[in-house]
Image (cartoon, rainbow, N blue to C red; front, side, top):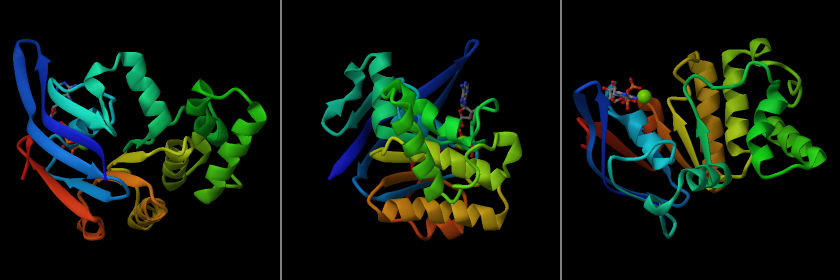
Length: 221
Ligand SMILES: Nc1ncnc2c1ncn2[C@@H]1O[C@H](COP(=O)(O)OP(=O)(O)OP(=O)(O)O)[C@@H](O)[C@H]1O
Ligand SMILES: [Mg+2]
């Protein structure tokens, strides 16, 4: 079953009077439970596509259909609601808040929909345990290694039990052992049923995916 569809997606950025056409007609059906890898050279539009698919950004034209809903009808607050409830996002640079410890970083997005502290701490503790950081709940990002920071970011992305996890080059800043661990974590989550959309350049990871698409000059090659 298709969980998320992109229909004829175009995305342009205007910088001053210059318009850069980045996505030029992307059609894509993401199947429930699949591990989809997006690859392509630097600047080809992979991150742009991921942002549009995950409702972090709006396309210039075209439709994003989530389950049976055309998100074009969504207001900005509905976009955020949908993201917080149904999507998880892992960024290349972790995007953790430095003034919050690991546990607080993980539970922060949940606070939009929950206010029971005991329950929040319980969920946060469990997901951090799942990613192997059960003993680092109180560590601040500055007290964590790159691999551990990315684990916190993965824990944060899955704490809401999302339907789709988007990861944009989550291993770019890690050595190959830590990178493999993060990718294994994503594949494990996928095996448990989570739909994963992963952007990566690494051939050894693309080979493990259910499906690989390459973005080239704004279209799927
Ligand atoms: N906010 C923006 N304003 C203007 N141009 C942008 C913006 N974001 C991205 N671009 C341009 O869009 C193009 C695609 O960028 P994008 O980040 O999607 O590429 P990418 O495939 O993810 O590259 P990389 O592998 O280096 O991360 C680039 O040429 C970039 O300069
Ligand atoms: Mg990118």
